[in-house]
Image (cartoon, rainbow, N blue to C red; front, side):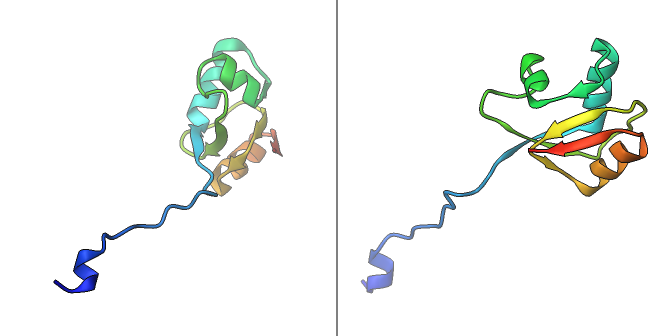
Length: 94
């Protein structure tokens, strides 16, 4: 049997890959309406059970934002950033 068939195949695993927890704008709007929040931080998301203790948060642009919010997150999509600023809010990237 040839050597390339005898030796097992191994793949590549990137140990430095950052995995984000996705949060949509519709979720932020619902959270702000339900609890009358103006500022949404990572700690607020953890407190309400939307993120885990070690999760990194990325805000995605699915949904509509009608309230001016101050959002703190580890990552943002371009559409989410545009929607937050269009509604009169501010963004802080951690």
